[in-house]
Image (cartoon, rainbow, N blue to C red; front, side, top):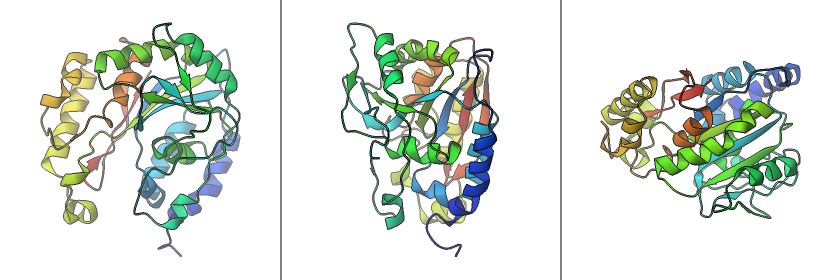
Length: 286
């Protein structure tokens, strides 16, 4: 039945798994992997076939990474921390009001202890990395990854957001940059606009895009393409604010991604368009 929660995900899963099995693994002879900033969607993503197809096309256009480091909007925690690296660490269901099925979904990934050790070695002595013993991936990580890497065959570590200072986040990203040359995919997972308190029924169900969402999206795309980091760091004064981001956590992962990519990285929009009036623009840094 197409009206069941997650029916679109069930429909696309066999093809997605087949494509993932046939995906070429990253090799040492390959170029460094790009960096992603993606709009992650939350449980409604599993009911959006076209958006899932975009994410799957994006992930399978690249070699399959050896591991993934993902920074989600939904883990604001200092000191800088990582999730438990053990295989099959339970997920965090940090959302409310959705169908029961979404609280039963699983995404068991392989042991990531080696990656955890590498991350710890990359961090400076004045900012040691705290490793949680039980915390797993939250929905800003496991929801998009369940679509992009549906076999769950890539080790994943989630990194916390210890601050919303763009320049400090850029520095954390710079620390992650060497991982790209080791076949590790670095992902900043947020949302290009996230004004949930200001959405109306026409926006959520009628396809109406609010002016504040369209204005911020256009501004952010232009500033990113111009490589204007100062403008992006001052996003609180951008068109569409404060409605586009009444709180900063869904924009902050962009700065970690930018730092991991480097100032001279090429940038393109991998996904655009809107969901519930929110911009789902996602960027690739090469």
